[in-house]
Image 1 (spheres, one colour):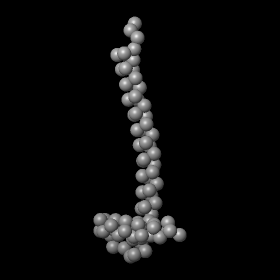
Image 2: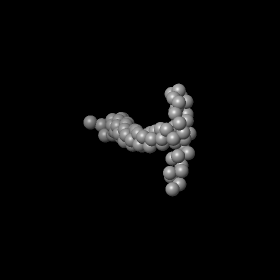
Image 3: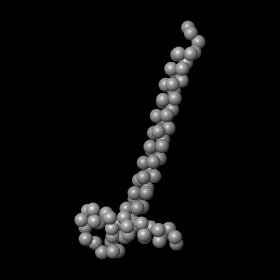
Image 4: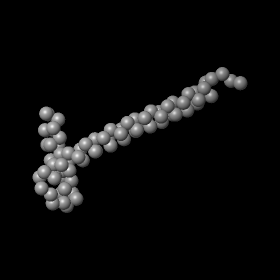
Length: 80
């Protein structure tokens, strides 16, 4: 029950701001519905982006670490 009240409060605020920014005249129910749906869609998209960014960040870190290891090997490793 708490999550529903939370979504309604956040949805009302987000919907109010969004309708004012977009200069849209809506009733209270529509404003809250826009905000709640926006919160759900935005939350899913942000989780997806964070997941992909986390995976990509790990990949970039792995490449940089591999480059560092190659450099260390060439600089301090056994000579041919």
